[in-house]
Image (cartoon, rainbow, N blue to C red; front, top):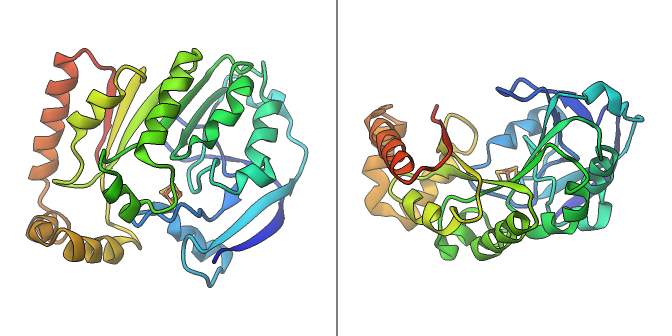
Length: 265
Ligand code: SF4
């Protein structure tokens, strides 16, 4: 059961501290995709929501007029603490309406999602010259996806959407994130997505936040044999696993002439 509210905000587009991103658009507070590793749960501190993360959604239906000129030549990212294409976007169209404003605006828009609802807006994307659309994918096993990203689109649907966007001439990318040690098979993901992705990003699983207990409980319950490895990485802070993985990614991508960036923390 999810609690939905319609709220007013002053600015729908806010300044960002993310590297290479000037502004972010988060059309919602909260995210019904309910990924167990979600880093955005810290938002609850600012919004006083009592519900569990994933059980509430505030739709920013009212906001002050956007001066599009101000964003010319700036990098704008959707979204950093929600999924702009979560299922309620079908009803509220907040993402759609704001993107429509950016047609021929000169802004650089980057979208990252786990939802094939993004296909709805292909015609809008075609009117924004500097736009790229990416999908986060960290497993090819949809049973695992159901456990860790219960309400996001299936992996098959994400790859199909990637294929369609790519076929329509949209700049596409795949974000292999977050990489779960010994669960995420990055080579398998690349094999499935490389024909439809112009580039790839890689990010490791970070448990320095509120999701730590939830993820470690999941590993204990569903992948017990991996618990010692997770404890080494996340309790003893052993970085050797990530160093090795980073080398493997470099060597695989260079050998296969894949455009990639690694964002390991
Ligand atoms: S899609 Fe992103 S914002 Fe939404 S729950 Fe998953 S990780 Fe969090």
